[in-house]
Length: 372
Image (tube, one colour):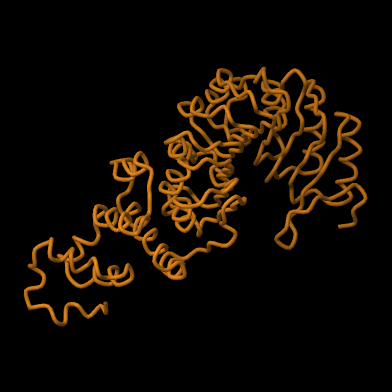
């Protein structure tokens, strides 16, 4: 039916009974309905209602888990996001090609049984496809503040009802320890059907206990020492890789505690500079497992070569054990000083030294024999 409906309806079309309007609207396509919602406030109020679109989904044969439906209309979910999801699902069922024009994003590689790597701009498209498809694994990497990413809550809620493996990297909260990944985990735990294997972000002490026992790789940014205390009581039988990130001087070193069950602990300490070596050694010693650290990373540091040497010497004198290597990112480390630090680290800590330099927009590992 052409959407010139209002041209032949009587002048009082806005006052027609809702039952009559719903009957008329049942003959319109989803695209026409979305345009009809812009005609007048009466039509808008009727069309932009979740009840209307749940009925349209039923007519189109789209099945939804009753528990998921209940949560979508609950008070904890933004109803504008819910409405957009339902409209998008109906639009995809009628005309898949129109979905990307309506919501943006891409459905590339989102097929059954595949590994989905979801970008921020594809979140709504992925939410729609998760209603009818079953990927093998879903990976989500967030570079923006999760609080400002539209439809992220709806996506995680729908994902939680899908039986697949899940990997979430909240890089924004990982790098900015004042931020939080609590709501991401909260939404993902709405239905414990999916299996969260990898998680990177920043959790408050209240949410540490919400980590599922399916975790195999965990990377946490720490600002509150109580997070480490909370981790002591969490049982993660499948955990194989644990990484902790602390910003230099952001936590009192004497408030940190050891993770006695940790076997391979990777420690990131960011934003260090000359003069921080005492705090660094104390903090590292407070957290070091009995087997030592797997690796130490000093990203976004401002260490001079002399400051880096002082830090390495202080770590060695404190009894810090590093199994693999120390990796540092500092604009002051030159190729010549890198080779000197490599030899000095081998002498003091009996491990490798690597430096990361930022060049042409890419992070590059500088080898001992590099001429960069």
